[in-house]
Length: 472
Image (cartoon, rainbow, N blue to C red; front, side, top):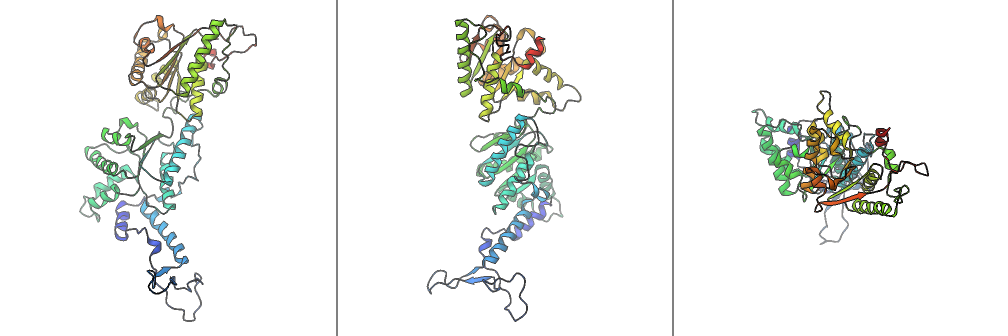
């Protein structure tokens, strides 16, 4: 990309005029009988301007206006100047039309997240207001979406300034050099007051005290003025400078969108539900009649189905489903997730023993993610489903990790669904105590014969794939 000094010096000298297309254009020399140029306009006869035909005394009498041929030229020239100012450089090729609306990942959940981010970015580009922050791992498409916003604004004839955060800080430092042709104050002002500022790669800079101070000043100035700002970052927002994070997460100022999940490289299945389960385990396919169940057992299943449907319609607090293996707990938990997916809401579904395995894998030298990044994603998921929670089968290390997740979500009253084969009311311990807290959620017992044993129709009910493998 071009050096910011050159861009801002040119901007300072030319001061892009919003009414550029309405300014009178200099006339060409009169036609002296020579051959007409190829761009000769028959409307203005090459003069490039027209006089308004109005009576004497009219406000526009004697006023010259540019011909349509000059307005077309002016629009083209203005776009060229806007692109030079934008600092996009080769990113000018990154538009909404040049990207896949489902993103680069083949994972259904990541495709869904990218689709939501794409629609939000496209809407923001038409009418920038407030702040838009795009998060996700490197290579997921954040920069493409941000550049597409800038390119769309330029197409609409508006200013947009795109800058990679480390480059910005380097250019701010360079203004202190004796040979610098632009002052620090000029550069800082142009960035801080840009009509639309796009800060790409926040968090990829060296977090020196000076760099943090400069960024805080820019964020403070733009947040106070509520200037349209787009931010991309591969970092967990909570790990950024607290001052900056507070501005990004301020609800009235804007919104934050996850472009892609963060665990794909290490845990390709963690947090996802297998497609076969999504197709098979819905509320419509849940058989509340049970498997040769008694009247009281059918009532138990019907009560659990109603509780799960109600929770899916308005997820808040906790819902814990417990009972023997094969009664349909996982089926209802997946059905809740399916309903949330239909409403374009994020769900993190995990089989508890597999979750513990993945957390252990993050300590391997070849792991692409840190323990903290995976653990924080689970702990702070918008809706977390913990399937098959069984305290009796957990090691001390695993129990401690699960306890931290449970305590955090219980204290914050974060939407959580738990399934367990344990008779929870007759157990004790800090995790069981929280699942039985009626002030934070609902505890539902499911009593029925195993769906998968001796069914007359030969079916296997709602048994998840991993439970079937485990019982072989």
